[in-house]
Length: 293
Image: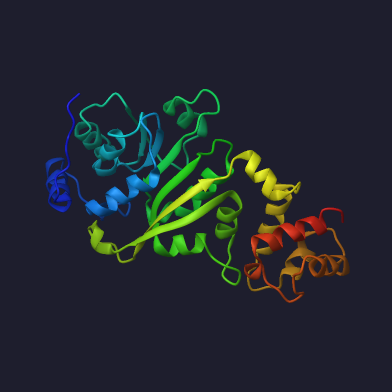
């Protein structure tokens, strides 16, 4: 199979490709195409691909990232919602036998379909590399951090605000940040300006690398705690962010207020604390104190 070599001027190439396939950008589904060669190479380097890598990409678009993935990985599965984009992607990739395109919404597609497309039969590692549509970031991260079929890593181009929420510190924590920090090791590799996309979005982006904890690593980090109980407490705590944590817990748990107050103190948490003020270690300590009540 011959390979397409991307030109240096990705902006011009994108505009010509859209015209060729009768497509428009930015008007539907928030499409903003990456047109910055340096950012593209930074994504590839951050992903740390091998020739045997199995990669899931979200929203292949015109194939700029897809082509780079195909040149380096063993198999690339692209989930694309736009049917016209699917046809363009198939043409641009020249029908590569390493490429599988799944039509549909990434959030709604069952894990079994990804597993089959990626050719996973046992415990092989697989990766996600994606220029993630801004509007699905939260649901996407929840899906791939909490469902049974999890990647070994995720290399994501996301809205900068989302990246900063993922790495938030106590005082600005959320369910998203707690989930990401509980399940992975996160690094913001670099920030990306709107000029790196066409059409330009109104917000900045960030390139994020997430190393997903293996079941062994996760269990070791929890030191015997029940992750489902910890997550239940967190969801209760964040249910009403303006309320004191103790009030949220008292309203949802069959535990006396004075017992919850003692558990908070034993966990090193102030009685007046709100959920966003707790660190991951605070949640672990609180889970430990409350699990026997």
